[in-house]
Length: 255
Image (tube, rainbow, N blue to C red; front, side):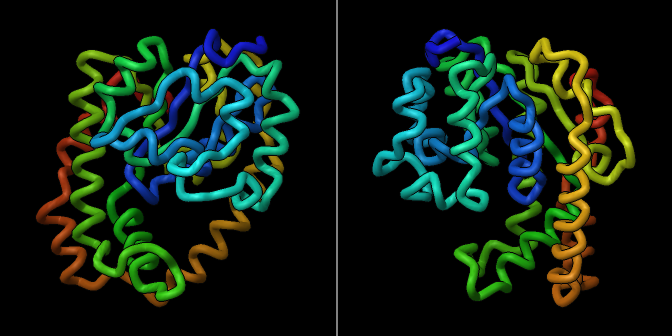
């Protein structure tokens, strides 16, 4: 296909720090999938949702305009070559789309603008999400807000689960458990691609090997930001574990 408007669309979302970028990069290793990394992040906000099929036409997708997202050049993303690789296969791809972590806040608008889209929601245990929020908040060289720590993680996590459960009553949203996908050894990833009609998927071993190396570096960076007993108590008190269990047991969970 060469017409971006006529293609089916794929979107990835999940509570921030839950593996949305990793899932997006995994999907884009397939020759028939081209996903942006918050390519139109500013156009998909719940308050000012402007995302439309026209944004995925080739000329528009590879031309960043002011107000599209947080980056000014495609070369700023994922080492600089990510969008170059997408450009090479874009004309022949069957699926195009984007990822934005908090797209769950815009489910109704997304469903209205892209009624036939496939949506993948990745979820992760709250303790690791909160730990990651804390690490980002403590990093003075990061653009992550200092106030966006453990309590923000709990609030965002709860919202992501409950909004996804509510939206699943009117639209199809497939869920993926982070730990099973990225922590399991030799996991069959084929179920992730089944909603896209893609079969005979080979596990990209280099991708997973690199994920292991990245995880080792992340763990090293997180050692100085272990959750305190008070923070763990806040999680135990305020995190919506009932929603987490419900999502895990629903038939829409792919992995």
